[in-house]
Image 1: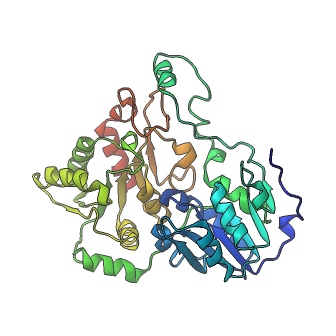
Image 2 (image 1 turned 90 degrees about the vertical axis):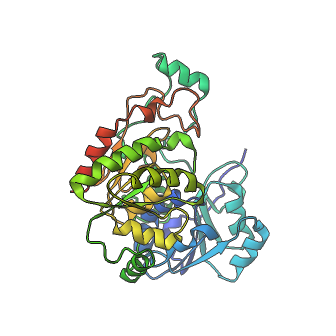
Length: 379
């Protein structure tokens, strides 16, 4: 059994150069921004560097808590990353991911103070291993047998996972870590920044600069898997109902993996009385952020662009199925700008990529309810 190392209290440190080992997924990265803002508040004069994968480097441009980024390519060795970090001469490393690799990177860099959560196979790599946060709720994938028993009416485990408890949200996990450095653990809204010039450039590139209608976004994909995707035919039906009373212009967002899905939605809507601009697979990350900022509201599944939009100040409407808004919902927990929609499916959240039964959690969410939520959020 590993033991946390003996260390002086981190709250007495006065680091000049801080390395934050960032997380590896887009939505998770957005949820770390309150902790980064609190870290900047605690150490206003420190130089803060964010280390993360190449695919997320653009997220941190213009962010008020980050001075610079260091990124690594997919497949780049831990030894190469550690060597890259040595030149930074960092005083302190804050390790946000829970993996042994993330702790090993900062250990190999020779950073004298290394703080992260206590986890198997890595505590000896840290100078301060933080115990799990009281009240943390684990996202545990339900078994097929458990799902069937819940549907049959049995009461199992923690049911709806502390639904409605704002302290259960993932952003508190990151705030708890910065609190070990003396920063405030109080939550603030996730925050990202795009400039007016970036918005204007995206409008020009995609022919949106002369649109006088309000722009609404549709984001029907979800990289995690189909258990997070409200059915495409329902996105189509909702878009057709929302357009006449709002006179909105629709933008369809998605990644390269969503081309077929977005193509189907585009085809169905273009055959109605209005058009939709399909930008799936065409935007850079910064362009996506600029266009999400431009939207009056975004109807989206629980996925990375949902978190981006909310952190940029755009209201989102989100059908939740296999995941929990209590744990990973967009924005500040309880933010009234966002409409987070759930059914009463007893097996949700199951945290599975694919539904092993009848997909009742999202099939049971009617188009009319989503339409009403979008209209309310757009006011």
